[in-house]
Image (cartoon, rainbow, N blue to C red; front, side, top):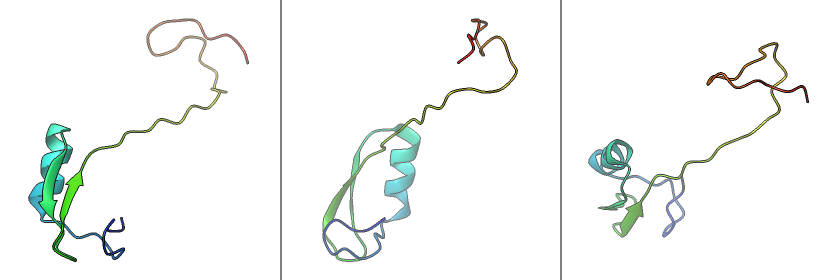
Length: 67
C-alpha cells in the first residue's frame, strides 16, 4: 500500500495494523516512511458470481434455482 502523504511504500508500526485487524476499529499511527499521522481502517469488499456447481441447496438449506 502506498503512503497517502509521501507516495512511498507505507510503513507503520506493527501494533497499528494488528490493532485494526483485531478490533476492526480505525486507529491512528505514525507512518515510518515520512512521519505523518495515518488513520488506518479496515475496508471489506465482496465479489458475487453466479454459482455453477451441482448443489441444489445453498449453505443454509435454501433451494438454488438454475441460472
